[in-house]
Image 1 (spheres, each protein chain N blue to C red):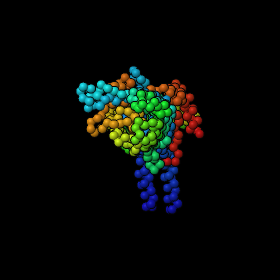
Image 2 (spheres, helix red, strand yellow):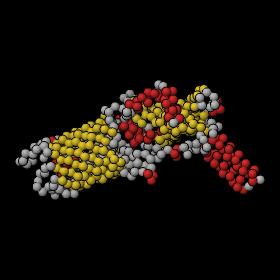
Image 3 (cartoon, each protein chain N blue to C red):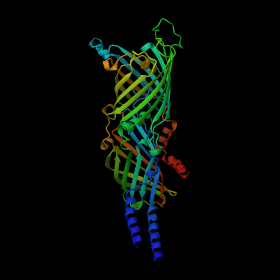
Image 4 (cartoon, rainbow over the protein chains, first blue to last red):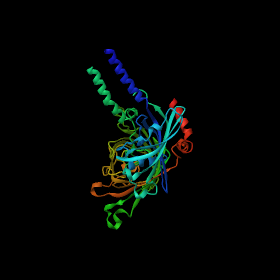
Length: 187
Length: 318
């Protein structure tokens, strides 16, 4: 009886691990955004995006610290943190979503897989639905992913003063590039 | 058996929790210690150095005006008919070191300084650094006519100061700094004055909105200045637009460098001897982009994603 108990516990643990093995993560996702306005183009880049996706459920999540975005000009970075996204109050931008038809994603087979991701983006204290197309590339066991979408700043209560309307675009193009998702070991 | 059931129940409870919070655990390992920046909008509170530094390669062109006393009345258009000014260029050598030169119309004085940050406030629980520590050292040389009959040499006209700035951004809105200072003048106007003196300064910022903040700075000379002198006090408002910071304020000091405002302020703030003044700061990026690598990386990301991918892979492999 005791032995069967132990076996059951082991089975439980192993099954947990096999579920965990279907999860992939990265801590070095690149997130770049572009604002193109008549007088000034702004680009910012963050190389420390954290992301996890669960192949079994198709769930995918992204989180990035806004303070980690680097700009060409120090003043842009200051204004971004202090005046626009208020990173002291709202330190992160988080995306949670689901990969549509995640079963088409064959991570053990080389190839490009374009999928639809539906979810929500939370930023500056506001959560809004956000959909995007993403392309997963599997090559020699490495899983990488890229995606692009546009964010309307007004949706997230980020106001642009009329004085700088020619310098800051109302729409920001976000480019996500994950060079390599790694399998999550243990859990 | 009960134990087994309990284990199973716990697992059942935990599993969906894991599924819902995929990111948990991953993010916790990201170090929470980060620099606390932007305690003040500018490298000066009003007259005094602030604990803020210029970023590397940034050139700050500053135009400072102090008008005449407001209580000169309507004839002098409340002081706006007369003005004293200082123009200066400050440059960021690195993110923690800057230099600056300036010239004031008051006593036709040239000044220069170096300023370095030795500690920057950080977050991070027990390992946090609770305050920033900055040291500013400068020199001034007045080139105007001597107030006495003696003809002073260049050395006589020179003064030096060394200032320690200890400041903290207490919250998103409120920052405060203390700044003890040593000041040495090679010549004084009256025999009762000391060549060397110590002064204590304080500066504060209170943000009322993302782009507007109230500021104040104050200095008290502990010894060495005539008793008829007063302590320089300035209160104002910082207004930030795109690339400019406007600092509008009222002050009783006419001088705009450390020697002048600490040793030559004679107006009584609370008796209405105040002047309207403004500092205008315009930032230029002259030291190139944030290092060359910044731009290269950008180009890599846009044109040849695969290249950066392979580079990243190597990094990950390590």
